[in-house]
Length: 320
Image (cartoon, rainbow, N blue to C red; front, side):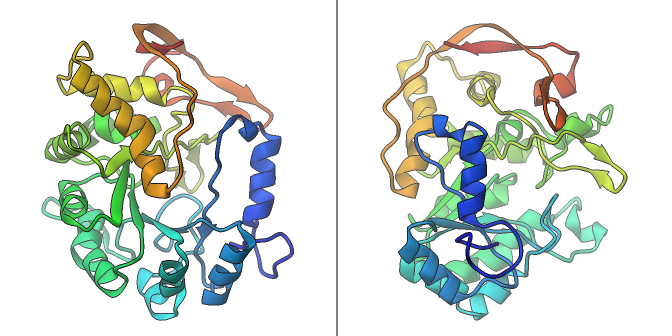
């Protein structure tokens, strides 16, 4: 919720969190973008100062209490009216949104004919892009056909990230047997929504939808106050994405399919964020790969495939 370590205010700063990531091995990545968590204390002056410092590249909007750890967000209208989003637009800071409407009753939050994500993209996002046409926005981890259709028809300043689980599964996979390791927010939706996401991602002309894992390494999935939201797919996301393409009937013997997959996984996202993709490469190979639970100083981390089956779980793709 701060930019620099020396800034006043509560919470970690981008500078501190980046140092923590680097100390944990994130120097293996070519580039790290740590977004500013938009809270009540975020001001236009903070945005301007952060950009001048070189530390601020993106900011993240969470609806109040919208997901695990998102207890300090404010309604999106707050940032529309207090100058924060205008400062971001003026200074080239990308807005990453958890696109769900806040404060809904359960009957509306997830209903047969509507849900929190659909309401956000039908009511909030049109107003947002109308007021701030120059603001670049990533609709993160889209889960509905409504969101996909919005991004598809929106200006080039709007793009979206897609997780492995939203390409592979539906809400039926979650509740049949209550596979809580598949619980994430926004929650999985229906087959028509998954089909829309797959169609957008796997379209040969796709230039807006890119891989974004939203990977969440919770060491305790079930807590006294509920189920922690998020699936851990770290280290196995390319394999899961490949499985999703195959599940949708795509044949990787087709070079066009290979090109669409590579663009989705490697180039569309960096291009939208404004940097050149890393030149290093890896090879996905059709073959068995075992996935097991991981141990670190914080405890046990359960990768999504393990949580859905037995330990070890088996993937049908491996990385060389």
